[in-house]
Image 1 (tube, helix red, strand yellow):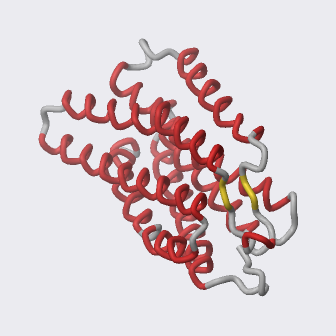
Image 2 (cartoon, rainbow, N blue to C red):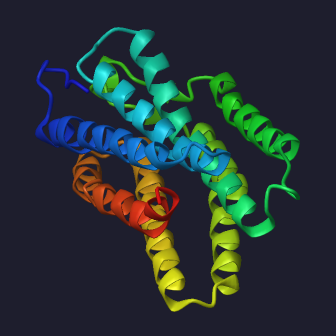
Image 3 (tube, rainbow, N blue to C red):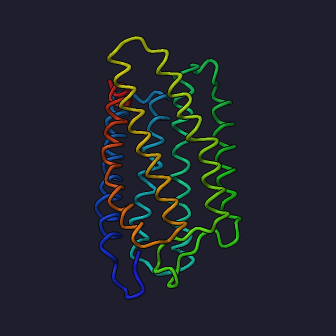
Length: 238
């Protein structure tokens, strides 16, 4: 995003063109590794997390240098929406591992996805939920209602259930190697969750020093993605 002086600040340059673009490319590469081995449904659902994140990151890179509304506003909403939607794929993935596809049928999976997607889409109807213009230095700023609603939906339907089911799945493993790998997956997800929360808080507070801090913290996402792949994705690719 561009400042009012027309110059993109250093923190934003690092976040967009180093962290986000690099992560988008890396996500697509990991999708290739997983699907190259097997295109079964479980693999595709797992890759849905990476795909949503990758597309969101690419869109973010595209609109970053723009100062045109409502285009920038729309593209940022799509970006944030995709980041939030990515958690739904992890939830379904965990549920399938815990309960099997015989119990969690395709119909039930679709219901979970549709309900979660619809609740997230309601964000678009919040008046002035996101503001991006010259008054904000072309950086996204969330209203309190938008912030609370988004965090509530993602937490209650996405993150909290993912953490709960991840712990339940871990308890079913007896093999030490498998338990170790699942810990890697869980740690990777935890880092991703933390960065998501901090980024959302940053966009609500709209404090430049905090945005710079988040830009640095975002570098941890590379490690998070690697841990998720090493913990689960590599086994799916075998």
